[in-house]
Length: 374
Figure (cartoon, rainbow, N blue to C red):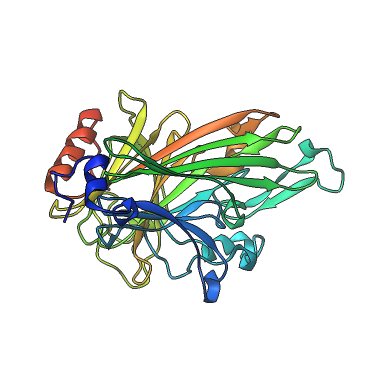
């Protein structure tokens, strides 16, 4: 149950407890045992029942996430493995799949999407004429520095906030910094992520950035609907025409399901933000996601409806699904000069009941329609 509306202020809460941590707060922890041994994490927990786990040693990505005890962040079975176990170049570049787990796994900083071999002559190091990237880059397995932990209690509500910094660097190569802020309101149902990526090096450096936001059961289930103001379908994997599952209505788990990926061209709202949502078939719950359309104009939908892996990925991206090679060829790849930066933001809102689901539907439909499935 939510807290009584008759206790709306911090002052009222102070009269009813000797420690505000009874209602909301931040805890620094170290995960123990097995694959997760030694991974630092920060737990943010608010007075509305929203909980999110920030994995400090996993690039400040988001692990477990729950609302009133019900999970909405996906768990793959990989666990939040210690970064020392990661082999970035193994399995023909697909070893990233062994690190894929939790609500948010970020792709970058110099590469995202499928891997390959790319020109590296801009780094002016003769023995390194090319660089090989795996799926979604190297960021995932880099530990962060925890810079700040802030519990900002106000007269009316407040904010819980953590800030971290991740450096991706090599001699004679990229030297990029991600500064990430994660926050939730003390009363509320929204997780916000704000990222700044800047180039600390003195050579022009490729930059790609993708949010792999993963939603699981029960917020993903048979009949869950994807709502988005879609201007058109740009690309779809071959499997989308073979399995009978549309982009806008999910199936129950399927044994041996082959992942389906779509690139949808979204229409931004008047506020310059893209919005998509997942709504339960009965309209009882949902998730709405929004982000800045200018910095991440591309959006992919990843349907992983395989039994035992069941999830949907909502993926804002700075580059199209065709990846780095195509972006280099057509001139759309982002290059950061020394001191140059890019800013990104992501908001994930839990829709707790049918009223909030209907409000979400109205917000999205006010931006634009979406085409029928094919």
